[in-house]
Length: 370
Ligand SMILES: Cc1ncc(COP(=O)(O)O)c(C=O)c1O
Image 1 (cartoon, rainbow, N blue to C red):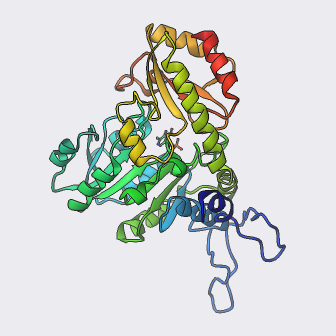
Image 2 (cartoon, rainbow, N blue to C red):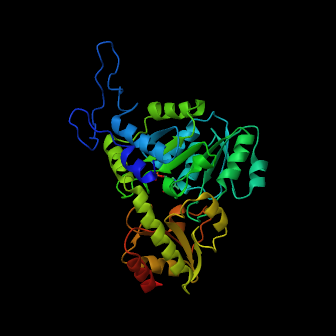
Image 3 (cartoon, rainbow, N blue to C red):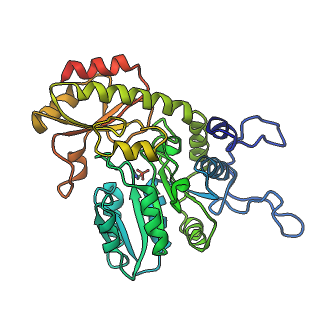
């Protein structure tokens, strides 16, 4: 089946008692046992599993072409579960422009438990040189946040396989509609479902999808059920509902983003635009090779520095000045102020999550302040 059909049907089970066409929200934390002490409904206790979480996991596993999925209460909890599934003392290779929340998680929560190197993942030789006998995981994020840098998923997966390492990809910026890391050789895909998958900026969530149900995946499942950072049935219901329109929403995001990127690139106040769909993007050829569509995220630099950047975001009317991404509304953010002083993000950079408003209104809004 195609993605549009999977998105609508793979996360929905017609209720066999009421025949409700849309799967209801099951709030019960516990499930009745049969006479033999078995569980005829297939569920025991809601932390371990529940029908709405199962529906969400089914649809995202199907969209990512994976064997199974584990849903979490946030994207950071999903990422943390991968790190917790490693033996203490393991070494991780991560991108030098990793999402700052996960970078800080490693630096603060896993200090003394795991070791890590933040390196430029576009340099394949450097990856090979950084692998040591304790290395267990390569973590990639492509396109990256907020510089929209790409790394070569197929090439890194070859390095990971040669060295017997787990290779995980944060696919939040792309969504499964724009990029399929498991089909390109990754072992695990991670999403902050807070973003495109839910798509309406009203739920936090995260999910992991595995290519194979193996021992490492069982470690992750243990972290999910014993750690218990799981999403509520209501949150799972909302994300599953949001996913039904994901393929169509992404078409709008991608089409608007391409036009907005071209407009910005031709504007005299703009120094540079980072969008994988522009031929000027340093990795446009790689984007064409590994992405199905170029996504809805971009960032750009203002010629007149940080002050001009702040003046632009404060003058916009249609764009909301806020963090996060992937919702139907356009968001714009001065990323340096959010990430703090140890960031590599330039001070004159604005990051844009291009929404589904009419493109003419988005361009007019920016034109007015630029
Ligand atoms: C690329 C990326 N990964 C992970 C996360 C973390 O997700 P959450 O905020 O749902 O914990 C974010 C959040 O902004 C993100 O942008």
